[in-house]
Image (tube, rainbow, N blue to C red; front, side, top):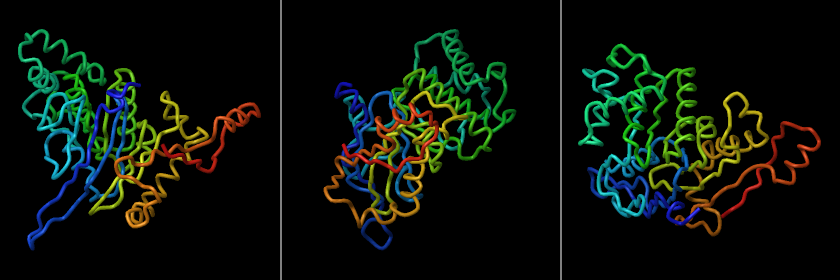
Length: 310
């Protein structure tokens, strides 16, 4: 992978501070560095107050960092852009517009010179992609929560953004709907090669969706503790993911971080820790062990983590 692709998104030393009434400022995070490659699906996990949403808003251009910069595809971010689509926790649909009208509004904003027929054709294609064919003329009030969120996903994808930013988009949904939408997002993003940065509190959601999982320490003064490389194959399936030999290795590592290390990491940083290059953690069985197990006919193994630093 070329360097430009490896650094498709480059977060470079950003900070977010808020003034206090009594004077001074509260530092949510500072000197935060992170790189995302083109086509990667990255999830950011951390407790409330660590600045996850602020990071996403800075990526979207909705907030300005107190320090540092964000570079996307070689260009610094100075405000919102249709190259970066955001899917929020709420669907944020226009209630007076139909499903087709909501998606078409975004499409016509992206391609202002496109004719009505072209806008409608593109809009219908993405409505169909998220499984809402036949509901084009319904208003948001006529849709379930999951269907509304599907419209939001269709609207975001229809403008063909360079980056899809998602702020816990499934957190308000019931478990069955949430799982269905996770499946849809994974299918679409895998087939289109979409670059995604997503915030979540759900460890299992991160393991199922992400190529890499960014672990943030508790705020204030939060930091990126490490980046976990997901060892599960990209063609993972919901009904079998828990049978993969590395699933519980990764899950236990993430849970352990959230339960304990997220609170203590800042004061107990490992020797050689450099915020400009957070450790890249590779967890799971070695290739030799996996091959030996396959030969022996074993299908499930929960190995101790074998951590490597890039």
